[in-house]
Image 1 (cartoon, rainbow, N blue to C red):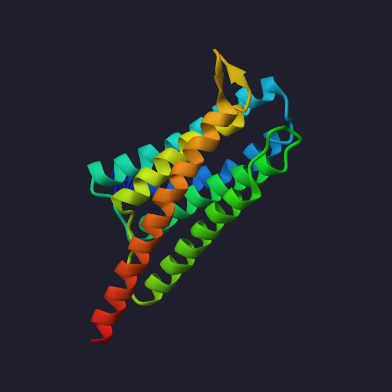
Image 2 (image 1 turned 90 degrees about the vertical axis):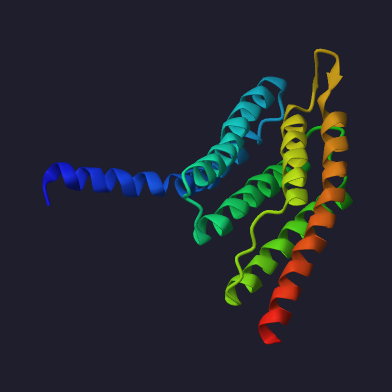
Length: 199
């Protein structure tokens, strides 16, 4: 094989892995975001929100590339939602422990994290049964509301007359409703698939 052909092959392989690489980049950004969230100041909030925004946008681009160019893989279907959950949960835990007032209600944090753990565990069970659990529409709405809510909670303070903490908490509460609904949907999908296989 010529060097040019070899380079073309390597470039093709790299491109086909682009969605998964973006998901891994999202995971790699988590330590930086957690470190930035150690500073509760208003200026630091703007910087952290910018970094979180870039990390969140990788979710859009990996999904776009996967669908647009037919790069959807079983690994991607597992890695993408896992990266989303780690990013959101890590940010919420850091926000809940920050020296800022008002904070995030502990019960809300428990529901969000409990739901994410339950769905992640379900995906693991589904994988052992050969079932790839993709994102449902309700889950995508939950993720969108949750992502915007976390951005607002990172900003926390009032900008341009808008209290971003109150806005973020409201969106997070709404996302919890969609989250519970989608979790029920995911469980029903897996239970039906397992029963059909056993059937």
